[in-house]
Length: 431
Image 1 (tube, one colour):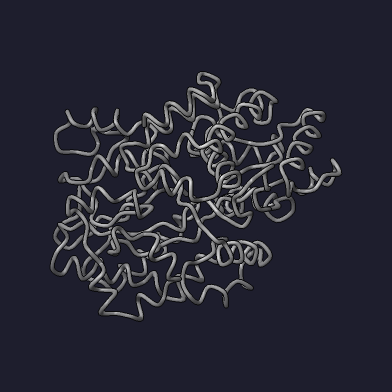
Image 2: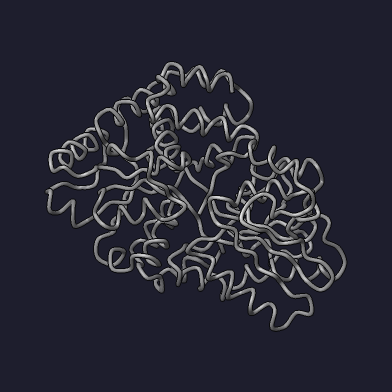
């Protein structure tokens, strides 16, 4: 699951006055590993149980032991980015690849894994090439995939839809009809965790992709700020305002969070009937609300939009998550860290992901899908990824890290009504 840098700059400023401990930046923090220990940081969520299991397996045979540090989701990015470069930095850490680690690469803070992959083609070939490449920076590899593929999917409550006599929306007219039907039934049409603006971002990403195509954000990602003035961007912002004003997300969505399972629980308990979220939502529901996952949880692609030029098969989200190694790790500890990363290419690890409801990034994933808790969902997601003409990395991960807080702030204001669509476009151009 992803967590966004909601208040990164504020956190960095606060931690700048701290001394040497990460504990100064939140609810306690570990010292960096040394000697015969590796400090491995992971984002804490429903999939962490897999990392716990494989760290235990690793520690059974390795002289260098791993200390797995689970960082709560709402603190992860801030604490990781603040710690890097300090004595409290992790030795190995969870990240989103690409833009999320580009500044670390620029400062030579990460181990370049390219020579390892060149020397070990069996390790390189174990992963789907497009997924491995998605975590690269300037053609060099600094991360090994460690979780499942993560496209954003439109989840819905099958039982609620059946009772209302509607189908998952394939077009925007369908979407507006579904919204009207559930508003008439005094039910929130779509859950959104307004307390975590990155969840709102998913609506913007798909609306823009469907309306104008993936090339608009490609231009933005490559430094062309004028792309924010494309008419499709204004249509996207206008559409979000219309959705909010219509009551699509309810009246209290700004107080709903995702990182503490607020939105997922609200969805599972029938408070809302659609949830646009990364594919990890299935694993979350399987872990936290297994009965809902088994009986009520449905999934669909995001609908087409009027006059859209984007490919309806295009995806947004995260290809996967990655492990990266701090460049300060050397000698036997580096050898151990590399051995730990190699474990994630093994069929046993891929099967563990499948058992947890995820779709592995390894090349043998297709042969394992029938053992998924929901083979239908597994095939749906695998086919989405395999057939997608484009897979746009989440904007706040694709843009330079320093831009994410302002991006989130603008999104929060647009959804909250503090910023007009026109002002939102202008603010993004300034960004």
